[in-house]
Amino acid sequence: MNYAIEFDGVHWKPGKDFALSDLNLQVPRGSIYGFLGPNGSGKTSSIRLMMGMMRPDRGEIRILGGRVPRELPRVLQRVGYMPERPHVFDQLTVKEVLDFHRSFYPDWDRHWAAELLDRLELPPHRAVKRMSKGQAGKLMMLMALAARPQLLILDEPTDGLDPVVRRDIMTTVLDYVAEAGATVFVSSHLVHELERICDWVGVVDDGRLVAEMPINDFKNRIKRLRFEQAPRITEEEVPFELLQRLPANGVTTFETWTVHGWDPSHRHHLESRGIHLREVIDLDLEEGFVELLRAQRAAREDR
Amino acid sequence: MPYEMLKLHWKASRWLLLPLVLGAFLIPFTTWTGGPMTNLIGQPGIGYFSHSAQMAAFYPALAALAGMILALTAWNWDHQKAHVYPLSLPISRTRYSVLKFGSGVVLLLLPTIVLGLTALGVSNLVDLPAGLRSYPLELTGRFFLAGTTAYAFWFALASGTIRTTVLLIVGLVLFLFLADPLTEFVAGVVPRLEGVNPSRSFLHFMTADWGPLRVFVGNWMLIDV
Image (cartoon, rainbow over all chains, first blue to last red; front, side, top):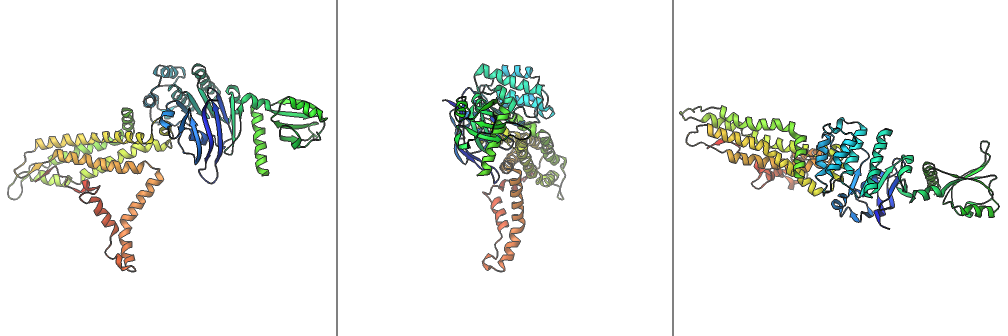
């Protein structure tokens, strides 16, 4: 498969408290890849590594086929980046920011930039420091898109924005993807928002990649199972990963399992062992994400 | 790209450049206000000479100040946003720094041109007696060179983090003030250190004929013999 972003055994340790450990990422070209993780899990650090702002201690990073940081300027000409917080010189006006920015991008689309400026209702002569958070977010999006990138890297693009601006920004991104077929790598801890737009998902926690798969696989493979009676079977005997086991108690009358790696054929496997499965419950992305992280953390604490 | 970088640097430094440009006008202009006084034996033009001598120290000071202000304003906005934006641009760090450095050198031309034009004007207006000459072009060239030297020094310092910059400056100041007395103190125990003056030797090296700061200590008079 052809990948827009590849991390191969990337390790980066900036200090004592945090490290990205043997990170392997593979973002398929043309996908909208949601990079999920709690605050402080390494999302922004991973993005800064792919932008070449920091060098990994070891491992290899390839963006659009070019090695980072070796082939950086050439690679970044084809990448649109929207950081977590507005990063431009905020003493400049919107027009000045755009004039400065476009001088670095040979494929800058002036007409489209003007159209987006109009559509996103950005005041061209207002200083960035006098703009609202939503307006600054829209400006970052405009800067990322008007360079006509093959890859969009969005770091928490809608964090702290109101729902109207969030929708404006995400609609603009989706319109561009539909038109240009670009790849989007979007990090967020707002899981429900990514669920609507992503087709791939990667989950990072404490500097490690916990899961990476198409979002439908992720949702289909994490299930909650309900049993009439506590199954007499050990964790080693089941064909899936048992993330959590909640026995029946005064509140619930069923034993409940949360599992990863579920396949419909597993029902037959359980029934052949005399275990009656009452219900298989679908989890949404957020629930699946939370359960997965909880299980991973418990496993780490056990070790 | 160079033009956009120049516009950016101009916007960051324009209000601080204004007093520098004013100074670049006033310092040579003051030489003219000295007037054609005569000395004790009746030679005219000694007023120009003495005012020129009085103003001589202000030229290198202004050049050093201009270099420092332009260098600090070159990096100030980058520091405010932790350099995230420049690092995300499709340009090598070296090229970005060279463009930034170049924009500062171009902006340094502003006070230099004002100083040069004023010095030329004053040179044409004064009626100098035999034995006195004006040096407007030499002075302007020296000013630009000194300004560029100061700019390069501060540019390199300011490109690092504020912490690094402060550490380097404090280290330099401590060295200049404490190295000689400390060496003298240690010489009481280690006799072969007697007569060694590290900070004085350092200053001597910096301002010697081929030293990097030589341009600051030469003759800065607009009107001289």
